Length: 252
Image (tube, rainbow, N blue to C red; front, side):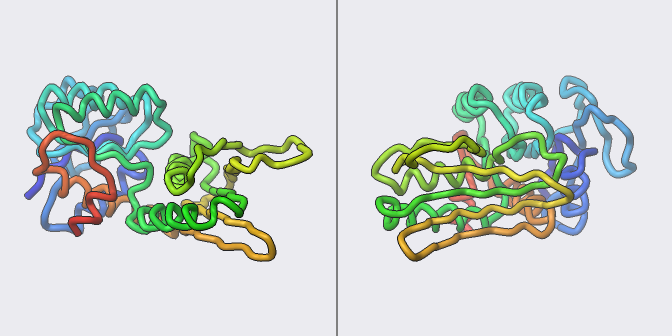
């Protein structure tokens, strides 16, 4: 039985993950970490990582970028593997994950859905075939409470596209300015925020007289919860290093 410490336990995703774990018999949540320390009647909730007095096998962090330093400090101190599913991390924070991975296993993905991982591979292949003659646009849509834009998933897909190209693309976020001619190495990334949209991502390859679209639609947050718990089980027995959905899918 894998023992999980859940960071962000009282947030929206934290509650979905808690429900997900309750339906499994291979893991359990032994403690939570959250600025909101309201008791949930299931496991103890700590407001500060330094106060945690419960042993765990792995950490799932699905909280806020501001909580990352405390989570990493605790993970390094206790040599506990960590699944970092929080989005909106800065480049400096991602570098800190890379540094931490030399001492502990770190699982990091901008999207915890296996479906998105597949889409990422598909757009990489499409870019390698079409990139020289097709314009490439990425459109993403999320609920109106999402704090980062464009989404981490949109940036991940853009990175996958760039790996399939023979040139390094220029990203243009939500561009509105008129221009005489589009740069051939430009990828447009457009963010939509509204209502309760869970997550929509679409990569458009637009050529002369034909359009190819690769898309993913998340209908429930449970897919991200399932992915993060699967990642926790996966990484709990790994050696130090950086892991992602690619490695998880490869061993599935």
